[in-house]
Image 1 (tube, rainbow, N blue to C red):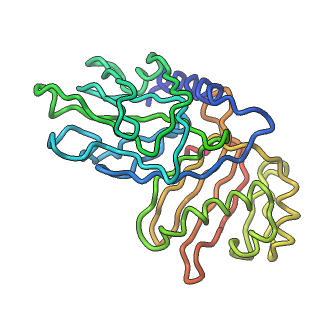
Image 2 (tube, rainbow, N blue to C red; image 1 turned 90 degrees about the vertical axis):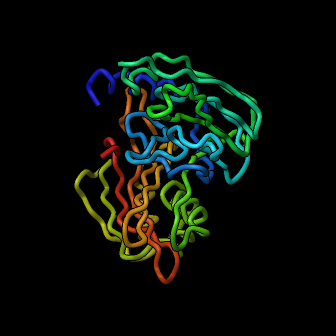
Image 3 (cartoon, helix red, strand yellow; image 1 turned 135 degrees about the vertical axis):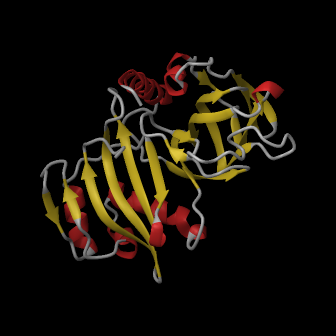
Length: 294
């Protein structure tokens, strides 16, 4: 992505975080899993928060196809109150439906325009007070554009009981039924320094990179009590987003952080959740004040 796009998307990031209007002190949010129907699990957009990006080789759901096929649909594990929404597409407008009812229409970018930069110029749409269990994204495709009509990005904020909803696409494979609970427990470990939860979730000894206050120092607590002592020394920040990226070997790379007002810089955490014979285990925790998009 070129420099102009990055700067523009950084401004979107600041606008979206401000639009969320979650009062201080920041909450750690509520994990809401997103079952993606009709298309592939989205990638994370690293330039701006709360972004679902079309996977590189995906077409079903994300692009025009059989008119009778299911549209790209997000089904939430619990109803959410919708906040800000933006959709970027090429070749066709996108009609957004909440629980089967029309909510809003987004026009496609103009031919020759940068898909990501164009999002900066689209008006931000607030769906305050509207709740939904599902969102469907329907491409309104003229026949001449059928081969090139695709959704590129979906930017979405939401809340549950006045707390920020941390929207995470569901994973597939072993352990998927208990992954949401493990993810929620991991936030208790890194945010609350919960010793009891750490005792059952963390795989000790745990390597921790204390990069906020003691840059470059690595500690290896061997017990939940020692972990809590190390955790309590670190500054806490509310979460603007939570990313979970499946990898090989039953590993899920997790990033949890708060976006700054100047763009994609995040203060937060990187760690792994690993599926083992003893269930999900937290490994390789890193506190960081640097950009987590790498």
